[in-house]
Every structure is written in C-alpha cells, then in structure tokens.
Image 1: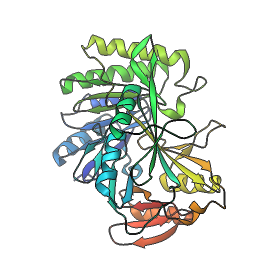
Image 2 (image 1 turned 45 degrees about the vertical axis):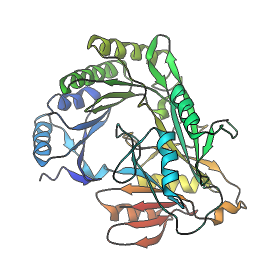
Image 3 (image 1 turned 180 degrees about the vertical axis):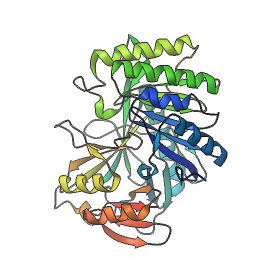
Image 4 (image 1 turned 90 degrees about the horizontal axis):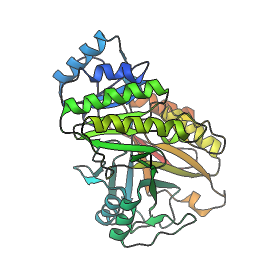
Length: 379
C-alpha cells in the first residue's frame, strides 16, 4: 500500500496540497466512482474503501504534481456519557438531523462530527462546560423542536436540553438572498445539489472550483456519491471577509446558474453547521491548548474567540468566560471530544506540552485533560 494513505475511522484517507481549487479539481476529474472528496483552496482530502482505488488516485496525483501530506489528517468527533443512552441518542439524532450508524450517529453527508453515546458510570448533575451549536434551515429547526417537544430557552431563545441536561443551541438558518435562492445562511452560506451520476458531480465540482478561483473566494466543495455540498466557511462569513457581502452573493448566483445548466436542483435538508463552545476560566490558555493539539488557527476577527482547522475539515471551537468560582469547574463533563489521528503519540506530546494531563492510557487510546478538565480522547 502506498505510504500516502492512512486508515482513519476505518477508511483509507489522504490529503494532497494544491495551489487552488482548480488544481485540486484536476485530480477530481480523474477519479473513479466511489471516492469522497473534500476540496479546498489549499488542497483536498480523499477517502476511499479500496487499496486499488487508493493506488490509482496516488498515480494520478503524482502525474499532476500534487504532494501528499498524511500527517495533517485528523477527525474530531463527539462522545456523550449518559445514564439512558437510548434517550440521549434519540434526542441528538433529531436535533442534528443525523442517522444511526453501527457506532452511534453519523452525518449522512459525512461532513460533520460523528456522535457516540456511552453509559455514564457516575452521576454528574451540573451543566457541561462543553456545549454544542447546530445551525440548520429554519424549517428543519421547527420540525426538530416539534419532534423533541420542547420550547427553546436561554439568552438567545434557541437552547434545547436532552433528557440528561446536555444542551444544544439549535439555531434556525435563513435563506441567503432572493438573488441566490438555492442557498441558505447557516452561520455561513451553503447549498447541497443532489446528483444522479459521478460524472455529473465531477462536472459541477470542476465548474465551482473554477468560479471560486476566478472570484478569489475560498470555498468548501465536498463531493459525495449522493451529491455536492458547497460551503462558504463560518470563519470567513462577514461583510469585510473574503466570503461576505455582495461579492459572495454574485458568486453564489454564478454557481447556482452552473448547477441549473447541469439540470440540478438544490436540497437543503442535509445542510448543517456544527461548532463547539467551551466555557473557560482562562480562555487564552485553553485556546492555546486546543490550537496546539489540533493544529488550529485563531480566527482573525477581534470580537470572536473562535479557532478553526486551516483545512476546514473539522469543527470550529470557541471559548466563553466562566467564573473561577462556578461549581461546574469541579465536575467532569458528560461530553468529551475524540480525536482520530494516524500518529497519536505526536498529538499526545503536543497536548502535554500545552498543559494537558494524561487521565488514562492504553495501546488503543489516550484520554487527556486540558488545563481546566475538559477531556480529549486521542485514538
């Protein structure tokens, strides 16, 4: 097997650096059906189930002069502990619009973090210091609230709690613009076009890549067997950022025109934005820890505490002030992050260098606490 690939969550996975969307799309155009692609302005991640497919992709990438960097691969997931795992699982399946999988809950488009719910060994009655934000189209949020049977609460009027008190801010998104009515603004502009064949999906991907390069606007372009998702990225979604204002709406119009020319119509049902917040006594220290272990970068906007994956493959984290005397600082969360990586020891060393502490270690995983007790399970 070529050294360019790693098994990540049971799937052969790699990353190729590329200088533009179009340069990455040139590799997409040479793919056989079945591979999943996450195309970015700085490269692309590919996932495939067979070694034969991986070898073919590596050969094509080499002919195009693309360089693999599997060391950057990672997957950030979420785990809950619950006294009633079935009830908690059902709540999060409904709130997030996920599907049941063999290991828990999964985004049907395999873009957002998976969720696993495990038995809780000891009572933890206080609120978590880790919380979840989910943004979905407004009609999907209305349907989820009705199915859950709760009225939203909280400072913003969007919070819901599962049967054990784990909270989600389930936020309704809006349509982007009357001039780009295929698109939804779910903390970032996004659209999903179902496709009927791999060739149709590849043609759309290539067209979007060229339009994004021509506009000088970085996009997330994710190709799946069921269709293509195009996403403007939350950390750039401001009027004075690359993906904000009239210039983005103009690009969105051009993209939807290209999709319509291919006979495609949008389906907003799978659209979703997910991010995680951490209540922190020392936000700077925790930001440093999580940036170090995840290889994240700080959001350039002064008014936010976000940190983000520079390849925009994993969820945004942000930090909110917590009083040092809050009794929640003394309780373990019922939520923790899980990090799947090809080289766990490098991440363990990074976590320890940034103030982390090992709670438990086996050959299969290492459970680490950040400086304020939030947990990361490195696998």
